[in-house]
Length: 361
Image (cartoon, rainbow, N blue to C red; front, top):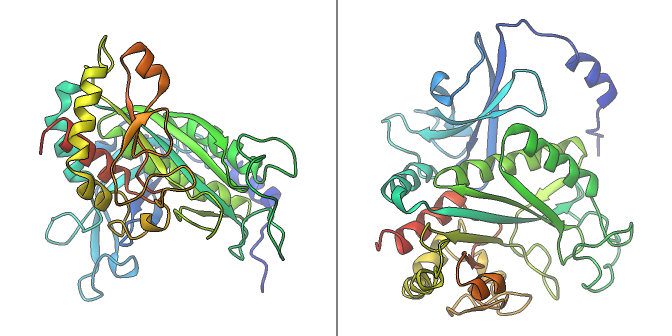
């Protein structure tokens, strides 16, 4: 197999070249037709944008991303969230985009426009989100990064939040990603090694409203982009390794203003009651294949609830909904929905939480 490695020292020589003051490279990022993959391309603009609305609407070949037919292939990119570029530095930017078809209607995987509508209608309740993105690092042969090529590592136990070369694999990637997110303006709040070796998690939030989906999607893009520099692959598969290994989720923490106030536990319990009556709808929204991916993960084992049942409890990681112990003791705070899969669309997750809890839909 031909080597795809390039000389990063040589690249740095060219990246040091200055560009004219009035020029800016803007990388447009969007979700492709799979609902999971991200694509990007760059254009030069003759000004330094301060808001996404200043940037021009662009287009791409949707027939190459599963979003259009070849005979009518142009799909439009609408800039919606602007970030500093941690890769090119300087005044360069990345912008998260919504995708629209030739008839100006959203593409099938553009769930942001519906999410934004829900967030606008629930604005007075100030919905906050914090999402915990789990992922697995793989070699380019799709074997878990750091695992023996002809066997398995020792059983789970020492890897969670671990330290040491035999317990942690890929920390360089994690640190680089964390710093890139902070630099760009993404509201990343933490990271840790997870239960399965080569599995990690980063957290984004608290974010209010639509910013949750924007920041998490861009953080995912950064993760893939950073891993590319290290010649490592990122998997968001919710059960990458069958058997006695933890799967990967996107636990979603949620609160409204009244939940965060004294005696907010009453509102948290009301929210859990509402969630209990819409379990199937949430399961369908919590992975791109309407529950089929999550079916492999939500078995009732490995710190999950069964996909078929709804449950809630204090400090119980085997429940659908966990109330953190501190929140139960102070009688205010937030709830954690442990059902979303690692490859869930954060726009869909945040939207359905708001529609069920805030809008009673």
